[in-house]
Length: 523
Figure 1 (cartoon, rainbow, N blue to C red):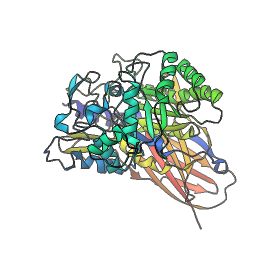
Figure 2: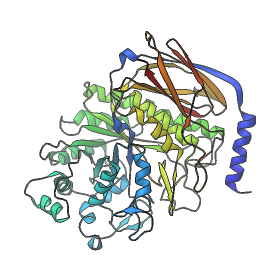
Figure 3: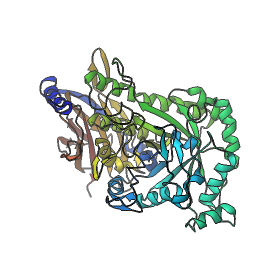
Figure 4: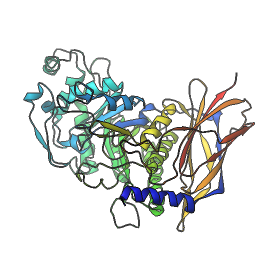
């Protein structure tokens, strides 16, 4: 019996005998429509493409002469899939790769570009065929905002400064002339620029004091050209390193940076022998621990945000969660440094929880980038030869795009508890928004893999009647995933198990599900 077949049987048995469909827990969500004021930036729904494994090469970028449909070697089915998500930005070239990337190696005729060794990710040879112009071509095809990360780890101030000049200058200058020689007359007009990456680790193992001084030096020479104003993103903390945030914010000059990053991955499952846990082979204990761990994101944002408030009470500096997502063991038979993993209903729910957290902190979180877009970690799409598959996480992002640039509706949540093995966490996680057309969208996820949840949403003081529509993402197996050449197990379905009365809506949520309700006022 194959592993995947046995997992399917195990999942069905878990659903049939481990769950109780008649058992319904109750939760209450109070939504304060009149208090909606903070915009949920569409950039919270950003993505990340690093020169790592098969994200760029064999993901976005195909071989010369490939029979896979492409435009200038950029794979069209991947682009078409991602356009379904209206992705607002794409971060590149890393990640740790950014700290050893020298941008001039990736411009000019491809047959004349020098090669390098990607020492961070598998020791493979990087031929630099995908560089600055190719990245901007990809962003234009995706109709998305580029986010470029500069090399502070092994690069120089001059190198970083010249890259910004190459990208944005329309003056008469050597870098402007070089860009034009390489086929781009007009400036790229990039706005978002990362001043280093993970400089506490792969970006140079710096102390916060040293990095704070360096970012002030580097930032001084990252000029604005024309009307374009750079939004400079400083390297922020790893996880709960609050001292890093304290030092960076205390030493910041007003124009040094406009964003401060934060990295946190859902990983290292408790009470199992493996370091990270497996993407599809897991039990309910690992399921529970996953969500216990991913909830830490809310604590991190709150505590780092409180430090930022001390130095920036007007919240001018955005918290940029530019690396987040699940990090499991790689799939068997793949390069351990390529970080290729499958993606289940569990990952879809992890994405839902984190996006709810970012939405609810919209006053401070200005951007976030899930890692990574194609074939790496919690990917949106996976490729195998000419085949492509949309992952469960893809559908979470597709469902949640209604929140792009909408206004956060504050809420109070009294959630039923999901208990397992003597521990408990909130079963229901939610966020809501109001768009410019006056429609409200409520996102709810039920983390309990066995019990339905009855959720009552209340809009105090609202008397208008509304038209209601619903969508859901759900599964009957905790380890269900979408595989190549198979019908999709996880996608978006119509949902109608709700009823409304006055200013209350009662929803019956299936186990391990995400529900999106759309409320349109009747005229």
